[in-house]
Length: 479
Image 1 (cartoon, rainbow, N blue to C red):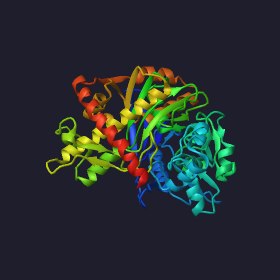
Image 2 (cartoon, one colour; image 1 turned 45 degrees about the vertical axis):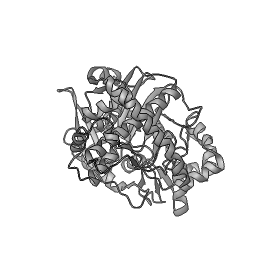
Image 3 (cartoon, rainbow, N blue to C red; image 1 turned 135 degrees about the vertical axis):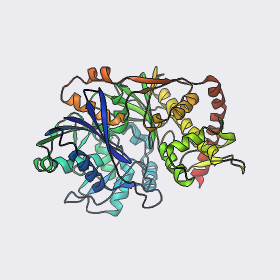
Image 4 (cartoon, helix red, strand yellow; image 1 turned 180 degrees about the vertical axis):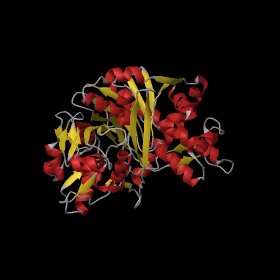
C-alpha cells in the first residue's frame, strides 16, 4: 500500500488511491495550534506524532506493508536535547518571536547576503533568526530539526532532512545544495547540530518495533518535500508556464524552474530547491484562511461557509471598506514582521457582511501582489493558473480572486494536493509511472473566468489598497 501524508498547520491528512473509482480517499486527524504569547505560534510535537500513529494504525487492516510519502509545512523548527527529546515546541511559520534576532543579522550582514546564498530573505520565520532565539534560552541543544524530521526520527531512528525543507530553513545553499558553511559559522552552529541531508526520493525503513506496534510487518518512508512545492507537483504544475495559487491557512504563488531564480531588484520572492534538478520560485503570505479563522471567532460566524455567504451580500468594494489582512505580520514582498491588520473606511452604517467582503478582497489583493512579483522575477507570464487549497471549496471566493487578477483560474478534480504530491513522490521513488498517473487521474474539473466589468472595478480598489499598504509601511517602521 502507498499513501501520501501531509503534516499541516491544523491537522494531518492522508490520501490513498482507490483504483476501482479512480479517486483518492482521504483521512484526517486534527491537532491544535497554540498561541503562548504575542507573536508566538507553536504545535506540540508529541500531539502530532500520536495523530500520525492513530491514522497509520487505522490503515493496518488494508495491508501489512506500507510506503509513506511525506509532505510537511515549511519553516518549522524544534530543538532536541542529548536524549533527542524535544526541549521546545515546534515553532511554526506564523511565529514572529525572533524579530530582534532577524534585525541583528540584517544590521550586521545585510539581507542580500543570506538571500543570494539561500533564496530566503531574512525574516523571523526562517532558521537564522529562530535558531539564535532558541540558543539564547536553551543550552542543552543537540539537534535542530523540522517537525517532519522529528517524526521520521521517531519512526526510523534516523535524523534526516530532505532538500526542499532544508532549503526552506535559510541555512541551505541552493546553488551548491548543502548546508552553507559561512552562515553556520556566523550563527555558531556546528553542522553536527543539523540533520543529514537526503534526496526526497530516498527510501528509509522504519524501525521494526514501530511497524509492529501499528500492526504492520514493514513501513517504508519516502521523505518527500514541503507542502507548498508538493501542491504544484500534485497537480502536475512542474514548469515555468503553469502557476499554482494556494490559499489555505496561509497563501502562496509558485512556479517551477530548472535553476535558481532570484530577485535582482529586491527580495520580493523566495526560491527553494524541490529535488536535485528542480527549483521553485515563489511568493508567500502569512494571512490566508487564518484571517477567516479570526473573523469567525471575533464576529461570531457559525462557519466558514457563513462568512462567504455573508460576504457575497456586500457589493464589490465592500461599500468602501479596505482590509489590509496582515493579522500575522507580512512575508512577501517586504518581509515586515511588525505589520499588523488594518481596516480602513468603517462607519456606523457598515455591517459584518462588509467586513467579511473586505477581508476576502484583501486576501485577493495579496494574491495579486504575489503573482505580479513571481511574474516579474521569473521573467515569465504563465499560460495557466491552477488553484489549490481550502479556498477552492468556495466558487465565490475563487471568482473574486479571478476578478481581481483578471485571469482565468482552473480547479482540479482533487483536494489535499500536497498529500497527493507526496503520494506521487512515493510513486517516483518506487520507479512507478507517476507521469502516467498524473495524465490519467489528475484533471481540470472547472474553470473560473474573470468578469471583465468586475476586474475594472477592482483595478481602482487595488490602487487604494496599494496606497494604504505603502503609507503604513512607514508607520510600522517608526512605531
